[in-house]
Length: 323
Image (tube, rainbow, N blue to C red; front, side):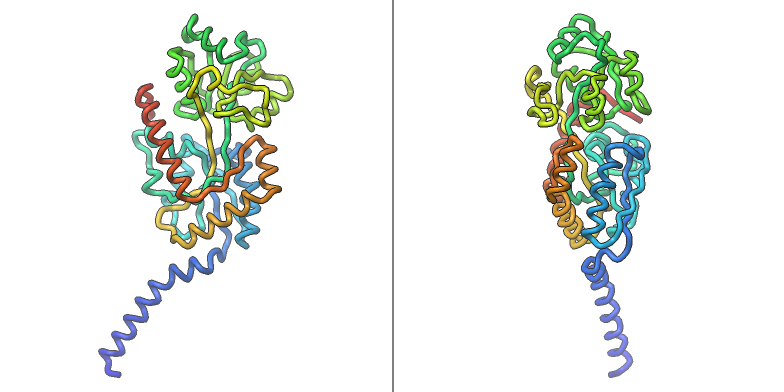
């Protein structure tokens, strides 16, 4: 073999090695711990579920899932870190619907774009919200709340975790659908103390987050935001029973940086579905007030696309923008 032929063979071998490396990495994946970023505060709903599901995913994949909370700016800070991470399957995002469906139309300077920078791995669960009120608040139903809002616009103070949060947008949706107005009181932290003290009368909160207050009789529930009544609150009506078409259903799921090899995406999705469908996991998720899912990446992507279009319309109609 002459020098030219030897060089050509060497070049082809190098190219084959480069081409084969991603496939080999995907086939052997994972070979080290996986970092999972949760873009919200420690102890919050996404953090709790990420640790619960992540422990089982680690066992299924044969490597530990290291959960790291990075809160701030409606999930933007943590989400952006994942969007800019290497696309090798070792940095994942455990997040919630807002980061993919509400932030894009809300924030003019969003540093990431969900469909451009993140690849869906699968949804883990649905979550519903409920309208809860201070026990001294006169309305006991959504119909009574709407009647009061029409008679005395802006007289009802409702809390949220900040402008553009699901709690805020859920209230905007109710106002738009009933032609009423309330006063928005945004908070950076926990709102329960002010709700119990009557500083604010009302808030829209995830069922799982406040079910303890409800069962203890510290607050009352006007309605739930899901399309049908919940098993955990069977006697509580839906908002839609009074305001047809009203629905606010959140969800949680996992993402990876765009460019992650398809084989790794498939491996992770198969693990997510297997873990979430385990009877003991289904039971635990339901006990916490959620609906277990376990979806394909395509189902997650389709839901993101449809909900983004829906929230873009609502946000534009309400003229809400956040710099």
